Image (cartoon, rainbow, N blue to C red):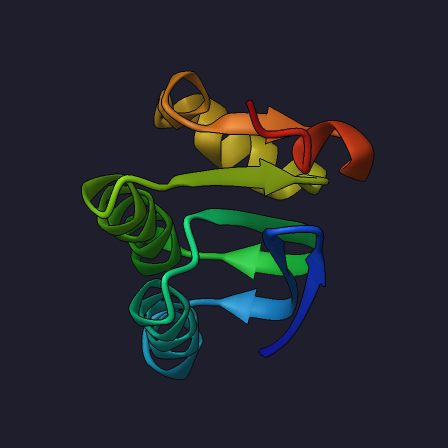
Length: 111
């Protein structure tokens, strides 16, 4: 799994590719989010367009990241969910928790 971080204004977008699963996949996401929060970043978008697999640990990491960002007074949004990721989030009813966007301009438009 790889993460490429870029900024649009004051929003940090994490372009994630590969698998978010138990082990290194979840650790990379966790550490990247933690580093951004320590740097004072409050607006984070996870671009999941290139995520081809996510397991229960990966879903748990998304929830943990969402909670960590909210606890610091920030917002975390999801962008470009693949069909598989969207199905998993729908089954677990997490689509009602996350703000999900299909296009980047809308995702980076924070109030």
